Length: 329
Image (cartoon, rainbow, N blue to C red; front, side, top):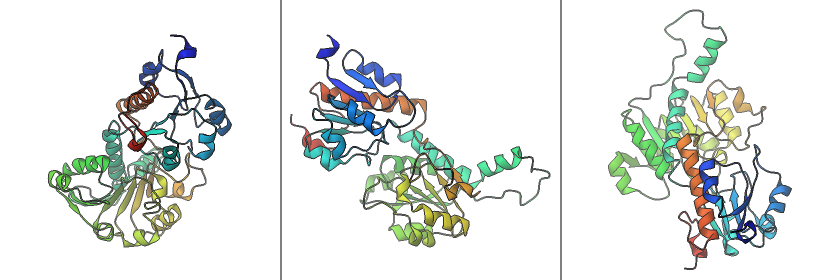
């Protein structure tokens, strides 16, 4: 089949070969193969004749973009979250939205627990201390941190990733509290977790880890009020979305010692500006949004995003449809 007869698509980020190989010979696609998000004008121009858009998390899919893409049938997001997409606007036009759930759950849960451990035991701070030549002598109070084993873990958002974190917590004999929009009785029983109100969770947890979606309701779910509820010895972990946390309030909380510290993989602005105050604090462990950055997870995300795109373009219902109401069998 000639390229002219194939459905057209724009791949807005350099996804792994594991995904691209599913599209070759079946989709006439153009790809943004450079680092970082493509310029807005590049995206709009590339979608002029496209039926499919494989989107990166940092491309805003809104009415402006949709107006520039009159033939669009699907927005396939290379991520679990889809807060970059105006789903009601896309749905109103009968366009499919898909995401990449499940395949990155273990990797993200692993990283959340890595941040729990590294923040509690001051791993990055200790590494810098050694490499700078400041380690002259061992002492009983040298870089003393917090205990993880037997402590209380509060999980905000008890979906698949939150539950995977709870599963890992069992290996450390942690007491697990969770807060979610709905009770998850089966998971409670299987994982030994207990449902708590948000206030109860914040007041009673030694570690608070965020695993909820970013919505209008959850934006700044952790602000000054919530941080002041936490123990002075508590640590906040965020591997979900940056805007779940009021960063200015978190800076004050960590610098003024309302809480022990924080471990962050996500920020309100990404990439993080170097003048971000949180980067100056030794009790804040920071990473560059690498929650899903394992080979298995990223290849799986690429395959899912490509498969969802291909399904919609060939008349099949995508597996990971976020807005099923648009699909007419």
